[in-house]
Length: 289
Image (cartoon, rainbow, N blue to C red; front, side):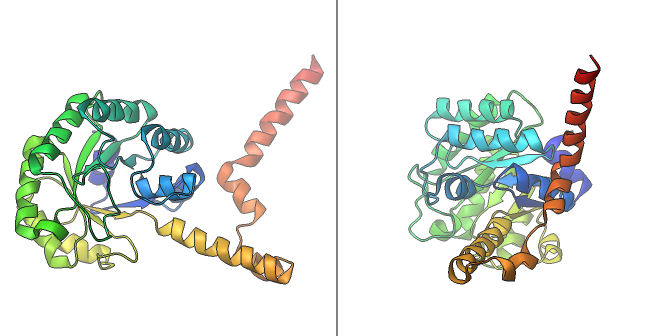
């Protein structure tokens, strides 16, 4: 047992926080989290300045995955949208993620031209097509510890009963965990976890359809994984806007210094002084020769 399953065994419900890059992954680890997440929206928004409308591809995501896993050893769950195409594309995505060090991925049942899960006018494929996607992903696994999570966006389109029927089919097809998207109340989580024999993830994203349920509420509802996909990114972005506007309007950053991470704090996270000492040691050895 390793990766996400190990983290879930150690902490249930398992809190998973979004990390848009390697540095935020390091911050999440220092805060005590046992698992981290790379959002498709995070890749699109933060790395490419694009909306979350399926405009990024496998290579874009793998680049960010590789950066994060190089810097941080926490298990990383990755959003792969709809898998980027046919069974062969899905297979390539899973194999590439494993090689890049990801611990798991979630794949959704939206159509290829996808939308944010908390926006209107979503469209989903039929259950048969999603099951084929899942089978292709499971067949591509080269690491038994890698977790394939099936995300369903069906609730807003088909209702709860049919969504649960879909979930049963996804589990039969091989899904190892379920990402239940777009819940509007705690009772919907309860209904899904009661019907499932695999762990269920709740996406507690801000400003969306799902209420900001507490960890205790979700635990009581049977949820085993709780995701906060872009919380830090939103806070970082708001802080950046404030700093930019302050500098632009006042001509100085003095009034916002108290809100900034210090140079010493940055260096502490990065173990800067250890690297610097290594340089000093290497140069000293060179002089001795």
